[in-house]
Image 1 (tube, one colour):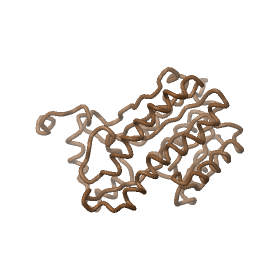
Image 2 (cartoon, rainbow, N blue to C red):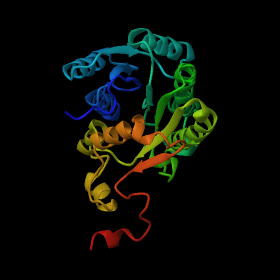
Image 3 (cartoon, rainbow, N blue to C red):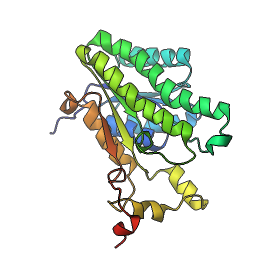
Length: 263
């Protein structure tokens, strides 16, 4: 019988009640990890993911916490350690969409985007990192975005936060490598999530246009992100630190006329 790559490991995944976070939580559990499922809003949705994880034979619990709230984050990490005895893997996935013309972007929207996606990533990494430093080992995986590399219009807060996440990944990796802690990031392109499908059904997003712009001619699936998270959380990635793996079907690599892809 093949050995599960994360057997005996414990994980905390933020924003795990749906979408990419849910896929990552289930992927980690499928490889043997016990997983704490964080949500900001819907505990009902989080509990469904918890049950899915338990159906895989792993332990799990749901915890509601705003990652931009430092005391709430510290409580969440303590609860994870209390329940599982340790924390081996942290996945900073919690995020939000902030789309508006820069000249009209409200201060509260700007700050909330930065607070959730960048400050929240730091707060969670800091709290979990302290435990990992004491353990002399751990894996932190930050969910960045191709928008940390290339700019999309009307996404000033989102792009700035994701670029910051990529830089933070390098800083933490540089500081904590000596303690056996690896910090890496995943930068997805357009992912076939419920959010993307809803936008398409509303006519505000043209999926066929996205597919035609992508060299692989397909959107990334949430399961694709889960597979990369498993790799980064496993011993196979022990000597990878401070890196961002781009999962976008070639979107950021491609820089020629769009018409060439449609020949």
